[in-house]
Image (cartoon, rainbow, N blue to C red; front, side, top):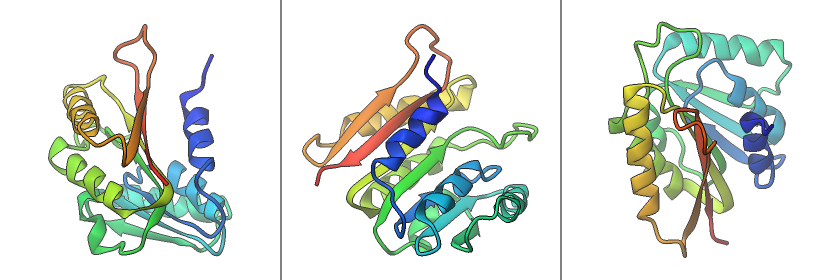
Length: 184
């Protein structure tokens, strides 16, 4: 069976290399931040966003425990404010929409900030870059958020970006992810 997390990393690694700049738009517990940090190495940089102090604390601890290079900027702010902190082209961006794993699930990503964050991410893409968006439609906001993201990405010119959706056909409430790649 296909492991969606492994597949996401496969696609990221086709674009992201040592020395590159990446953004984790939804830091959570830091798994993606750690992956990006180790991938870009000591000469690259990762910016990671979350609105919950708990996410920054657990991510900071994860980065220290896993011996990551000192190449991350952890930002306590909404991902839609990315351009206040990042003014250089990025080679990769990761979104894991939904709620902080292990939390009470009362705080989730919201359509009102997710769409502007995705728009900003696309505008920051360097040549041959990738944005990966994991969507969790198993709750009401996640389902609505996923529909909005898909509608928006479907409206973009295929001559500028390629947007691909990967999902399990016979499990409509299972998570799916979207790959956004720009045209060289």
